[in-house]
Image (tube, rainbow, N blue to C red; front, side, top):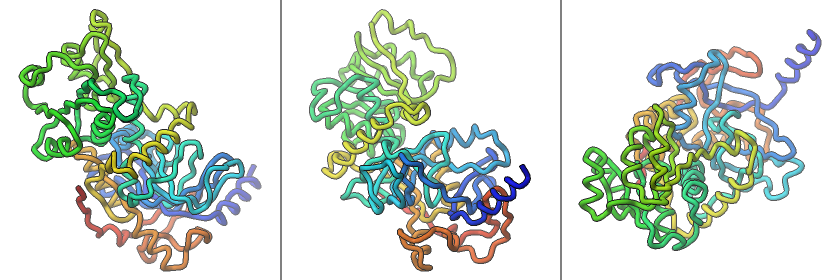
Length: 407
């Protein structure tokens, strides 16, 4: 056993390394060590997987929730689900992708995340990235696009095709968030009348720009606003905010035989029986279920392929509104803080371009070995090796990059 451990340590020492940002505890996001930078072993693709060089990633509410629920104190964990990247290596059984392809996807919830230089992913879950969008614009789209598509297709049982739901209306609760921003656009593509809730002047203007026909102020009485606008009931509801708080309202306004879909957990029990008299339906949508249970993985790839076509045609636009530059503890922590504040409009993206540029300047191209100097331009570090991980105690120069806002 000791001999095996020694051999594993020797083998581990010679494995290619990569930069990553992650956590070792779930303390407050304001803490200096809320996220840390480490050099870790670069993953290797299995026969059905791709090794992807991550070009940009975005932060979602589920990332924040996963971090707050993290329990393995002291164990380094990498988060991040949204990816736009370039294929770096291809598993032996993969036929549809080649080294150099620019791709986008949503990773698996319980696997090492995207806040790293490289990531492995099952090829079925991947699609070619939209050709007409830059990396930052693409990075905002995977998880929210698949979720919005699932709400319409699996939750509301509608075909996501042009004018396929013409004449129907949809109430989107929390229209200005990441999912709502995509859902509004897809519903308009399908010919629906879209009613969206929003709170601030900026968020109201944002959902109007995306195509919302009617905007309700969630600070005011929603029933009254609906009635004053000529709607006693609605055909379908997508709850993207708080299923418990909005339950009674949704029961009141859903039409007989209408459909309700929700993506947010209930905090207290709700009365499903209240929908019986209307013969109305309720569905949970959680797009990460595919990866968690390894079911219908290819459906994710198919949805992303269709979304890429809609993005390239300009039918759906990217929802990125804020960008941090450089894979660093500072950038990731700042993006998480923005999303955790529950006031973000659209999506917050972290662009890895400064890291990739720095790597290329020292001679690391796409086809070269990654077992070279760290992407983090820190200078000398005090490195402590443990289980293939080298913690970086120096402060990344990329921490000085400022965020930019995009609309």
